[in-house]
Amino acid sequence: MISSVAGTVKSTSVNSVVVEVGGIGVLVQVPIRTAASFTSGEKVNLHTYLIVREDALTLYGFMDIVDRDFFELLLSVTGVGPKVAQSILSNSDASLIANAVISGNLKLLESVPGLGKKGAQRLVLELKDKVVPFASASGQKANSVSHQVENALVGLGYSNKEAALMVNQVLTDATKASLSSAEILKLALKNSGKK
Image (cartoon, rainbow, N blue to C red; front, side, top):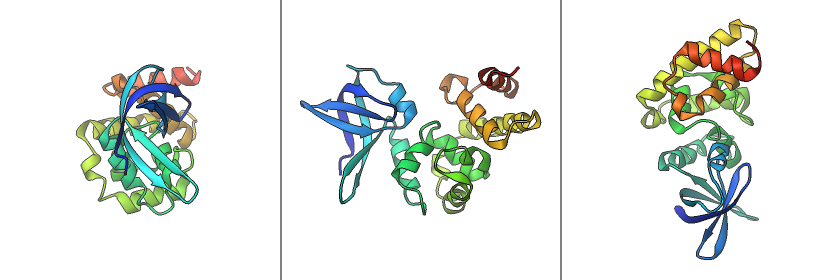
């Protein structure tokens, strides 16, 4: 098992990065938010998880070991493969998803590409008791505020999925995690082009 990769970023794409380690370029699949934060020439240290298949060896990488451990937990859910697990972690960190699972926030979970309604329900059913160590107090606060804003957006005529995506886009920036529900609502509406 390859548990970490440290080296220099040679190139990036939407959901992968090539890290040069000892003269060898290692392709690592990463969440979209992680890939967007890298620049060529930057030194990185990724916590990794190796998936071995008949026809491929695929390395998945994460900035935080907590995200890697959460990725491994997601793989234990029926019907969730590595691509869906990576998609779940692409816009949110482990604590936000864990809090959504604990509170049963299906709107947020259904907004994940590739998961859908049944997948979100299965995630809550199978992981509700297992994700508690990944949840944090700040994540619980952010989750309750985001739930309030989502309800407000639904009241303004957006669908549940649109509302969850709009709030998620605002909250992906860590500096915005301490915003009030009114500020998040204002930013979500501004980002959507509707005021």
